[in-house]
Image (cartoon, rainbow, N blue to C red; front, side):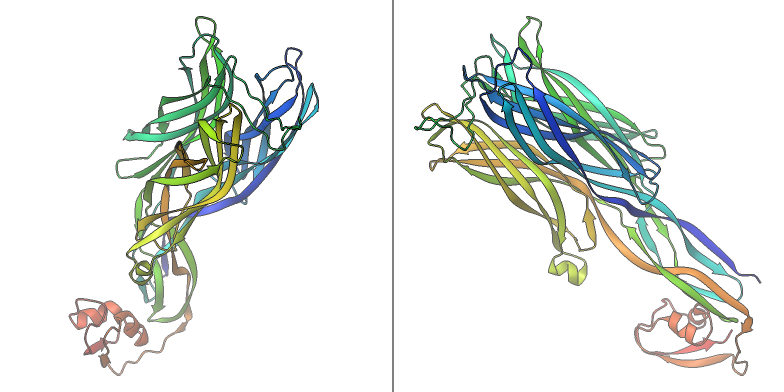
Length: 544
């Protein structure tokens, strides 16, 4: 009888790119005629965004934009002047192999930003931005699940794992005009703005996923007549530290924009476990005239990426051992790594920050910001988890925090306080082991502040952590089987049965392999209910 081998497909997760791409930013700008001359550069910032990406073969194409914003004062007055420009760029990333249905994580950040006034009419900005990029996909591999013929006996094990992931991603733009309620004079300039998005609900309907969410937009803007000034020392020279003056006409607005999308995902059903991830790719906020002709509206173009990953548990019975009772045989093994079904993590975390004012007595705070970058998530396994795969472990989230407070001193002088520091957060997760991993999505959703009596600003930050927590499991399975029909085994024909004294915890498979017989034959002959010896006993070994 010929040797027959049965194989089944198994789907394994694979990272095809994990690295960083960088882009230099050079901006030489001559002021238009209607702009006043530059006397003092107050603040310069570069904000990077990835506005679109696509995967083709083994290449990832990314289109990005760096928003350059310069705030400056003229010599004649303290009115703020704002220069805003877009610096666009494209990147092509070579991956180690083609990636179909890829899951793409892109996290942009500013590396550095320098600005100088070359003359009263010209500025020069130099900086760099970078993107942390990780691309993973699911690849199909064939696993031996059965061998028959030529006297082969096989040992299998049950493997439950996360099967082929169904993945769909869409980038879309939501446009909304935001009413500010500004009075006569309108809006002069936008100092900064932030956006965050969250999923509120999703439903699976006929190979589609209907996603609902909301975006929170927050902006600090100045009305007409608002001034930004720089501090002047007693000697009539500018201080080395820049300070920003914001009058009482500085206002903060928050707006919620509803989001709704239908994502096509063929094959998705009610048995799938779905993870829906919304992320802000770009938020363009511009001043817009209202019906009465004054700049009272903020026009928001929000670019959002929606990725839906559907998971379905699969079971497979791979071969882990074999032998032939008729012929000499051999096999080779390989180690495969599979993912368990994910645990969907959604947590609200809290951080505190402290910014000290060394410029004088702080009277008023107009707004505060808390930006995060270089986010890394590590797993800390508990002692209980190490001993019994139970108990709670910790997710340790760390990164770089950049804090900014804009306010006014008691003498009327404006001030801008900035501080950067490392942060670390922990959150408890049941059954967490060092085999778990997660690609975190961490967003700042709210920042509040209070002025303490010792001239410091206490920041309280609310963050939202979401992601899929997978456990990676390694198993050694048979990759290839060889039976040499030219070398038959010598059979002991003198006995039909042999006696064997089995010790506690011995398994029938090892005994059968030692006596070159079948495990099922031993179990049947001895009316056993299990393939493992629970108490020392005498066994009858049939010789087949």
